Image 1 (cartoon, one colour):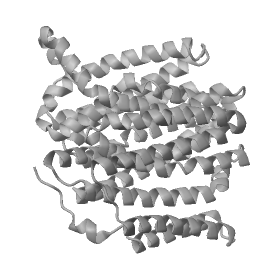
Image 2 (cartoon, one colour; image 1 turned 90 degrees about the vertical axis):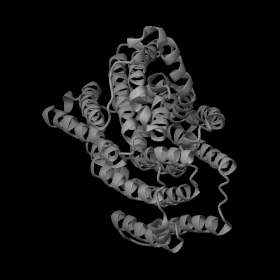
Image 3 (cartoon, one colour; image 1 turned 135 degrees about the horizontal axis):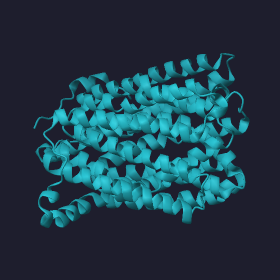
Length: 489
């Protein structure tokens, strides 16, 4: 399984690196630069607001389905139509509750609600895509799922690219940008549904519609099974998406500061693709290995070391090139405030990637209650830090709160895995892991302050040092990868 993971993660990263960065930096960034200052901050805030209600949109069905289909593929025809119908009902409920909360609790009015409605519809479509893909990956078609993972962004490149090309700069609005995404997401749903239809014998009509008397017990049973996963989603979303909403609501000119935070968060969000791809690939693998009684520790070790190398290296590069990156992305709005926010916020990438590895293992083993306790503590810490830091330091305060909260949650996830899976890293392994980070950090300091190289040259040199350090300190061990095999049913 470890060899399969390594090959698939390389394929998955390659596919996504070809498409998603073009959307984030070619489309999304261009939209922010074209919109009046503050308008993209509102778009970003409302987008984060939609995430606060994701428990209603998904209710843990995706992770529940991915885990159970990977362990029991024969049950897919039984589960799929019932879960699909539940997803449809949840989508309607999600949109209604979120709009009501925006109007009655958050104080949004007719300027914000139309845009929020479009973003909520996009979230329903995006969750539909993830649900359909969870069946494909659960059946073991990992590389096909890897290809489909970037289809939505590819179609968004086309739809939003045409939008930017056809519309004059002054006439672009956040609403038209969101609608272009709606078109791409809708087409992606149709394509992924057709692919799934060819890979599995599934029906659309739920079983309880054929037998109404059995409907309520069947629905309640599925809700009971997916509820723990739903709580995980709610808590994870709350502590990762509250920052932007609090930033916009706590400050008189909150939209401008949210715009600054959004500019920095864009790069973090693009990088988070790496951790999220690891998680989506690891979840069905961990679930299958646990069912077969296979030792998961080698795969955890390989996954952690790979993502540690990538996250630490990228964090160092971005931190020391933060000024040039902001100047490159937003030449007319560049400032020390924006670059410092980016530099501080991006360090959160390291604990975020760590969370992806260990929380995925805990989810596969259904250690959800213990995870939720960590998430609740993370929410409390995040709110307290934001309430204290945002009025004093604005977007920099929100970035600091994110970094502290993500580090706390990452340490909590690691502690749980040490407890439940008897992960006992050796002293030599810990020294090598820390030595790698120290070497890359020292390389970043040296090339930034002791050389006159351009920032691309400095960044390239750090990457070279990181690769050498990864091999020297055995963070990437090709002999171990060749020796690992996939367990058979």
